[in-house]
Image (cartoon, rainbow, N blue to C red; front, top):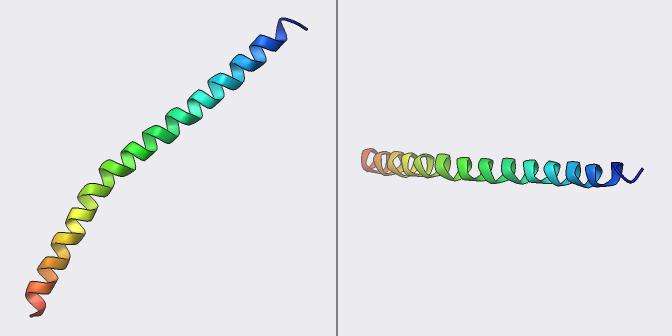
Length: 53
């Protein structure tokens, strides 16, 4: 049973590493995707304001 314990903790570490990587990657992607979207929304609102007046 002693050979099973390190393997278990290793598996848990790999799992948490994978989760952390996924979370970090998605947050980075969201940040990069958010900037153009925010900019396009800003541009559209400015355009809308200019056409509205």
